[in-house]
Image 1 (cartoon, rainbow, N blue to C red):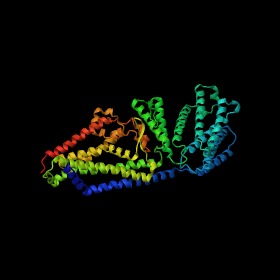
Image 2 (spheres, one colour):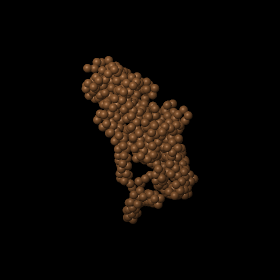
Image 3 (cartoon, rainbow, N blue to C red):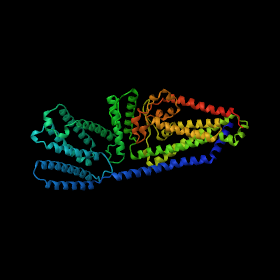
Image 4 (cartoon, rainbow, N blue to C red):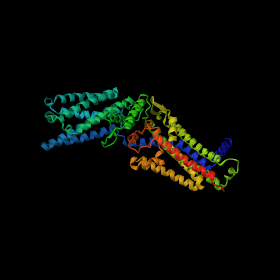
Length: 553
């Protein structure tokens, strides 16, 4: 054992004396420190630039609307008396009233302290409803009082109350009352729709034209969906997005997905809520379990205020992804160079002879070289994980990170952020481990450093192409045959099996949920683990057998 340790120590010393090793390790450290800083600055600058391009100053808009109203007044003053003029007059008056409603809405926002649309919250969305309520109220009031139905009269009363509720919202911040308004609106719309379906003569004669189409049914369903979504939103952010703690759109997308999960369970089907089609798939046991567990995890995060919904969380996720991707690539190149040269280069230079003639068995020499490569592999991953996590947290803040939440035997459990990131990075790096062993085997068999390294780099590039062409494209696993299970590349993504709820630990990744059951099915953790152990063991034994049996000249 002491000889093995001595060989290991000498091999480590020789490896770290190489300029290539130090240069690549230095680049990895630089990437882990500089990339989060650069991505943070670039992303915020881009978001700021985009926001500035789309900012709409409310006072400027009001001035433009007043100009339009002035132009309409001039047109009205020039109209004569005829049927055609009367039609034009009514059209212009309708446009004028619409502009005045918009001005009233923008005045409300300005009085509440909103100068432009650079930020979004439930008050902004409520102002859009206000515009709708004002228009609806005016259209129904055009119906003579003696011709209105009881339902229409009640609806006018509701609209007036709804308008007052929304107007007071900036002062009261009573978003529960706003949601109640939306629910009552749905109830009225459903009653109107029922009357249309029953071909009520009274409705057909007195109902405004815009209600007489199937679009009312779509409006009802959309209003229901968004109302439920706002209820979920308030569970996460009771301020309605007004305090700026959470990124509004990210949180809204998240609550939209929550509602989609619950609707799927309720209806017993799987349907992508962000899809334009209405394709619905049967809810299998696996999908049902996934949905139920997902809702439990989400509820846990909401109750414990750990959901990563802020802008900082989104930037942190982007930073981690690109930083780790580049650092992993550099580490893979370093390990391929070391593994591909560890035997062949020493044979080429003749330095291996000094070890061979020593009273040390060849297998110990081989094992010491392998352990050195494995040590650099693990230390490299630890360095990448720790450095990128620390710098990202320092740049984006502690609120930008979230522990890994999952379902255990005794309910919802968590793994600390830093431990989870390290474990997931190791699970994601099985491809590097595979290429390391192949490079070592080629170095032992071919005794040619350039060829061993070139073939190994080509193999690593092929793995990347495979992941893009098969896994990310959603090609059906079964359509390619069960034999695909025995392709090594198909078994590398162990992180999907080990951390299947990882999408809930990083902002901006909720979209991955959509393809969770649409991507190529995995062979399974047990199969992949056994298969990879057998394949790697075979390659490793071939490399050692070649090193111990072949003559070294």
